[in-house]
Length: 466
Image (cartoon, rainbow, N blue to C red; front, side, top):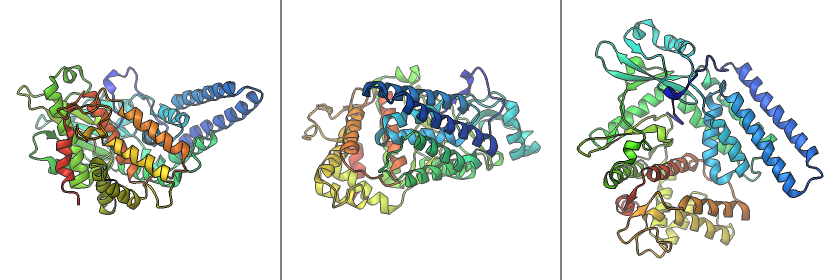
């Protein structure tokens, strides 16, 4: 489940959320009106101030807006929070910092719904006969923006399962919530003018609609279960169809620890490296073998099961954001990765043109900076002898330290260089969530403090790319 919060740590649960279109629209309209009034007041109050004074006032205005958003979010939940998460991850590179800070405020911690508020959804979707077969814990195990998870026990077998329950009417509020976010960002003049916001919001909308389709998620979970069945490195929960439906997803309960848990952090370097390589191998399988990617790499969607014999396992959770990519995108994308890795500029440039990242008529300096950005991206996988290893990020044994590297900061600077100096277009919509996945992989490997030789693993996939 995305941006998952442990409900056990929450001191208070919500008695209701604003699920009706009228109540949500009223709250969102109020936020937009407040933003408009703040902008007007800002213009009056800074008319005679210095540049520094205006900037300080502007930052204060945005901080106030973020505070107002947070105060309203608890009773809204749903796609407003989820879209904020999606857009802010995308916006790390392409939105102004002020817009990104505002979007991050949409991810405010929010407690789960109380049992009295969520129970009607269970009764409506499962019915009394099926509910009678279960013993459900009333306190939520975890909560997120679109739903929450309750642990349960099948009375007949004693099997432990989890029920993912969707919040009331969140699927019906997607369009109005996205419109509200866009209006709010426009009112605050935080949307880049040169970007095609239509394609960006269309991609977010498509993914939000998919994530509220629990029957599809059940199928996607079963697909991954079949793909990885027999690979002892991974555990995928088994779907229980008899207790699942459009708004309920029942799966087996799989016990494990988060990657930042002290027990995982205290594992020997060799064991952490082995887990990291398994995680990286799964990512490459998705990109190079299956063309199907779980694009929500939030740390809450993974658990690690420690085995006394050292054969630790990765538990994979939440496949609602799984996306299939067509060959018309994957073939040039894989070639772009291959060209970057092998320092083959001709292969890279042709693939970048095919994907419409760049155009023939683009400024040569823009092409050069974009190439530098992509060639830096594969830094963890270059060889020790590669001339691009001028910062010594790869040691003589070919190991890359994912924790100590400053690669994310260097990449961000390169992107800002592109955005500020050049007329840049919105990237292909397919890349939005694929970039989110790549960033999540980097974070996971950083948190587990991996020091691994990733080139050998990647080359096994790259060698098959024509």
